[in-house]
Every structure is written in C-alpha cells, then in structure tokens.
Amino acid sequence: MVRFLGNIEAKTDAKGRIFLPAVFRKQLQAAGEERLVLRKDVFQDCLVLYPESVWFATQASLRGRLSKWNRQQQALFRQFVSDAEVMVPDANGRILLSRRHLQAAGIGSEVRLIGVDDVIEIWAKERGEQPFYDPSAFGDALQEALAEGGQQQTDNDYGRSKTMDE
Image (cartoon, rainbow, N blue to C red):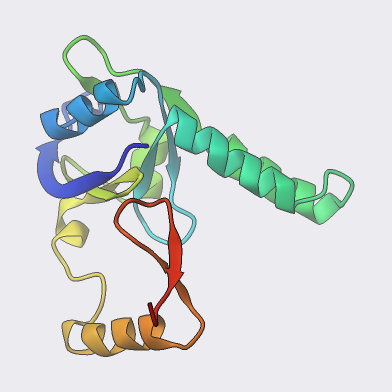
C-alpha cells in the first residue's frame, strides 16, 4: 500500500500541467500504480489525487454504504464519481489539471502537493502554506481525539489494531 509524506511546491504551466514530485512518482512506481484519479476534496478547497487502487477501494466503500435504490443516496454516489477524472502521468511525470478542477479549488500557477496518507492533496500555494489547524489548539484537539477510552489506533505496520491502553 502506498503512503505519501511530504509538502512540496510546484508550478502549473500555461496548459495547467504540473510535475508530480519525484518522491511521489517513485512511490507510485514501486507500488505498480500507473493511473491516478483526481477529484476536488469534499470538505476543503483542494484537489485530491488518488492512486487508482485507492480510488477503487474508496469508491467501493462508498458504494457499499449507499443504496442504489435510494434516490438521494444514488445522487450522492453519482456526484462523488462524476467529479472524478482519470490521469496518467506523461513521460516527463506531468499530469494535466483541468480548468474545471483548478477553478473549483481556487488554484492558480503555484501549488503545494501534500502527501496525506494514501493520497496526494494539491493546494493553492497560499492556502497550503497556512496551518490547517490553529497551532495553539492543535495539541489539545489531538489529545482529545486520541485519549478517549476505547478508541482504537493502528500501529506503524498499518496491519494490527490495538487499544490505546496496550
């Protein structure tokens, strides 16, 4: 499974292409991932780049929770997948970001690519440089989220779950 980590600046060219950073390309190649899926984030003004296997797992999880026979749930699923676009990096490691996606995320010519677990987020540079959480409250919020009794955490191998008391 691919895990991305990093916060890297890049620029879009006149056509809207960006170079995928070498560190991310190497991880994708090592995992045998050739195709990517791009969509705007559901909650934030950024784009999310999924390795194809991660996209299909995410799509299957959503499909499993939403009924095809419920009009509203089917519309939710349709909206989620209709905003997605398949990407294949060119020989130079570039991907083309559509104008629709760039506008939806408020991205201009400078971007930040941030590795977030199994996806890569693409932010407008000025937004990606700002803290995502109030720094003075971050520690307290993290403590509250992780210190609740009975919560499970996953250890470093991403395979075994254990309780916080172990």
